Amino acid sequence: MLLKEFSQRTGFEPTHKYFFEVIHSEYMQSELSKDEFCRQWKRKGGFQRAYDAMCAERNEQQDLAFKYKRVFQETKDALDESWQRINRLTYKLDMIKDIINNQ
Image (spheres, rainbow, N blue to C red):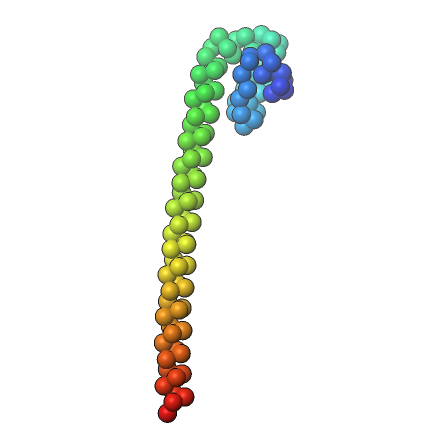
């Protein structure tokens, strides 16, 4: 069964990931027709299971995004600190060059 067929029969459009990993796998393991499978899927709480799974997936993605944002900020802070050190050392080196040139 295709995602489009499933959506037409149930009125629900799951994510591609959920459809192929869960719904399509369940359908392929059953011996039911497409129509009967979709009717039973709805009767057996398919909407709620799909909603719960998609919320969990969204939460995982959100947690990963926060993690990457934190790592990015830490890297940016370290880079800013390195540039400040370079600028201080360059200033000191220029002062030393001036002292040497003036002797």
